[in-house]
Length: 417
Image (cartoon, rainbow, N blue to C red):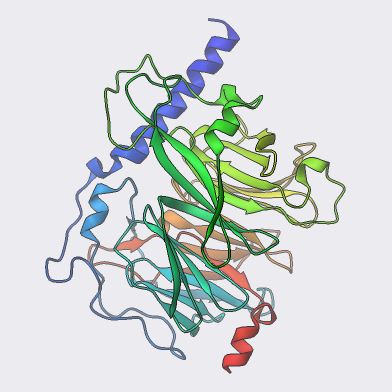
């Protein structure tokens, strides 16, 4: 078998594995539903000033059965709730953004897990909500496959944009919002009978007005990296609902000027994306609708949350197939600068995040297990948090992504006090 055929076969197998994982994982186990509450908890998290600790056992959301994500994982240490470790001498002091899909609430927590601010949002139950905090205290709530909601610091609705949004969004230098969106469309190149999910980015003004949309799938097809997309006409899928998940874009970031000596590819105003199902991260130019750079296959597997650091390196959560790691590498030379890889004990199969903090530490979200922790460059854990959402079957709800802020980054907190 020639080398090119081997490469094609490898990508084909990886693609099929990704599709089966995301489309049929609900077959692996049914989840109980409380008919009285439709799975919603009957008690809210404590008010501001009290440490988060859920006394009541939360129930699951029945609607999540039909979605392609596991939303909770069995935890033998299910009694652990909230902040478990805090080393004030080594941890970066600030407030951490936490959101609860089950409760329709988001919080800023102090270093000991006490809420210092809370937002409430009323959305239909889904498997995934991503929240993005603005300096003003406004909160963008991205509701999976439904739309984007903007609320102010007092939880008052400012506007709502319905769309098939998913996973992530980015804020541009002018305040515009760049949403990951998608829809089904025929792409006979991939399959003659089954539609594909056409990944797009929708640009909104700060007040929620649509300003433009580009197709990530078409852009990748028109690039030198089109060979990364699998052709699966030889597979007998038949007509299906949902569309083939070829790319599964799970992150978008607006690149800011870093002062580094990186090439023009990484200039301010370009965007970095992560495409999970082809194990690839890429940089593209919005104005030219052109892919400028791509990297990943054979180096990472099913990655999440790549971010460009001030030193010009990229920080990345590499999910892996059996164990995960967090890496920092030079995107020009691909030299590895730092790695956190403690072994099989650290594994998040379908989600994950990593944030480099101002003191050099890294805040890691081990999403599928429902934990987040801050580590030093040597790997010492100096802060650790367990999602307090645990049901009666000892299953802990996932954490999509936690983010730490310095208090002086958020002037609305000082105004409130």
